[in-house]
Amino acid sequence: MKTRVLVSLMVGFATVYSGGAMAAETVLFNDAVVEIGKTLPDPLDLWVSPEDLPKVTGFVLKEEGACFEDVCIPIRQDEDSEKFVTRAGEKWVNASALTKVLQQSVVVDRDSSVWSFGEVPAVRSSATAMGMAPDFAIEDREGNLVRLSDFRGKKVLIATWASW
Image 1 (tube, rainbow, N blue to C red):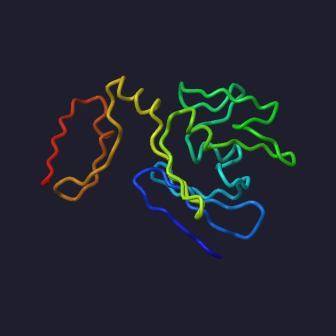
Image 2: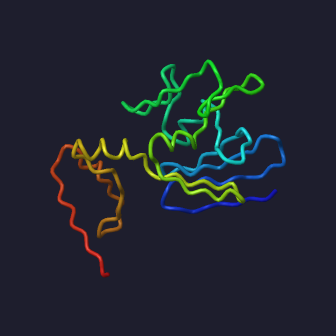
């Protein structure tokens, strides 16, 4: 078995070639490694099952389309389109087509079938509009892991420094 992995600061996708008609995918998303059992083979796009869509994008396929919190992308599920198809009775969602609608940055190595998706601008900007910083974790001076979310509801001053 041949394995290729992309390590990136963005969301990365690494394909595991198993020799079958449907490729297995390993997806790095939200600080987690997600194993996707099968995808719909396509030389240009990443097609995943509706059950796997939330694991790789955070979006859930609902009747009205692919939704994350209050952001929804309309997807008709009664006919094939560039975002949704049915093959051999199985439904597939085009995760890479969603990135175009969301104006999400994508890096693709087609020869290696490796994908790297950036943050969703609409989701990121909604946190900014609400005045909320994204959660992160860092070690304090004693080596204890501290998360910003540990201080939710309190005023926090974050001071940073860099040598460059």
